[in-house]
Image (tube, rainbow, N blue to C red):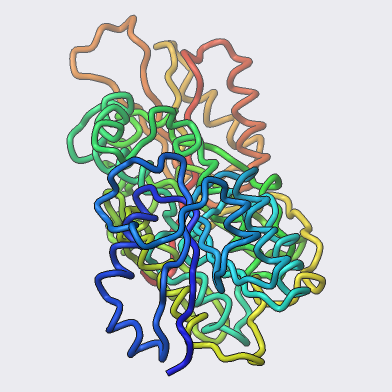
Length: 440
């Protein structure tokens, strides 16, 4: 049997502690399946005295992650600290410059520095693996980078943030407000004390930018994503969607168009009878559409210690099974220098159109005026209806729900601006895109 694969782990939080436990509990099985033992020789974390439920007594402790990456006797550096900056960035860079393989779960780091780090890895003959950075335990990185080689991919999209999916699911099933569901998510540990990164869509955007690079061979462009979170989704929107046969999900979407690559993250209505609409709670789902394979949908746990540790372990096992001299798979499927410049496309028309909710004063002619502005902007309406409570006070605002056929984002926004100028709107309009996947 080959010499043991020596690994160093920086970050012993939920994922890091789970990884240590799994590696220690399954030493014999992993040695058999990988053809060599996997040995933890060095670790690093902020608090040395914390009880993490695992035995670290015989493992070298480094107080500094960069020192671990630069000096430890390791073959693989495992980065589980998080964050786009230091110490994650400097420690990963240091390891790669030594020719040490790196496994990371850090989507923020990759979104900010992925192409640079991939280039360093190639220059020094090291691997940069990151299956756990996107969609937790779902093997979407391996699918795009290796399994779908030769396919021309037209679109990648999915549910990539468990916090948002949990909140939207709970709002629908229990009829609770966004604020109440967010508090519950925080109580259960699904949402951070400061949840903005998740609920504003930034986490999904980082993951989407990585998938876009893999799918279309372009440099990562995390700053070129149309971004909209779920903070403005109300229980009224959830209920209206249900009445129309839809559920609301936060989707990340990347697709190839004639004018470039379109990337967007936003709340989306999907038909209730589709598979992706049934993905509830903290579960993630990623769909890939390609010319050879067709449509592939992968569903699984998107977060949590064991799910993420499983993905990290898969990357470690791949390295353990590789042999000296074997050609490495580039981090983003092609050499970093061969990644194409990202060209942002204009927002395209959407097959399913838009859901628009307006609160208006109860005034004669409002209904007709709304329809007029839609027509003036070449927006064809699938349906238009007025919602009001039975025996409601005539002075109370009325709700108008519109569902459009396929149209352009710019047309919808222009119509909304015109409607705002009429003086009968109460509050801000709600606009939610509708996606109708072909065969799900």
